[in-house]
Figure 1: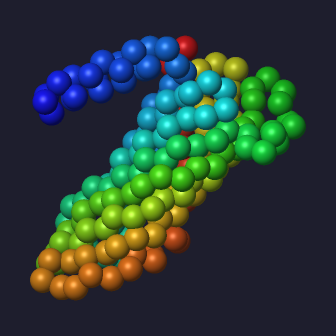
Figure 2: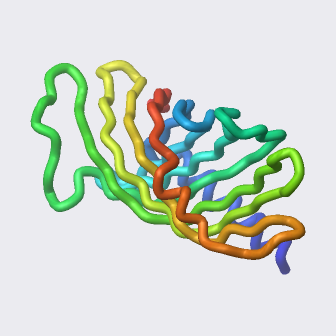
Length: 167
């Protein structure tokens, strides 16, 4: 039964992938990330980001994290009015986040709720630049330790992104 459900989900996802605009790219900030955006019409998108930490002050041995958000493009009927050759858009959304990191000894994991707010410039050729903030808050745990709240995620997640837009 699970096999058939997975096949059905993959079939629907592949049909949607060819029917809607999408973009793939790189995000740089407190981490190195890869993102995929899948548009649903002109006013909504699904943003999937996978990232690895960049060691800055802490000895991160390895790690991987990610966010999935459903975003509204130019919400509340507002848009950025400076459209010359390309187009400016802003977006906001909500979704989930999670990750696993190893800091030399304890392995730390987190899972929680993520937000997403950003502004992007779509060039007249198939590239876009963006400045994003992906705050997240949730549960934080460590091997051999307890469980707490992940409030540090509120201050992470500011990235500069460049993406290729599929025609």
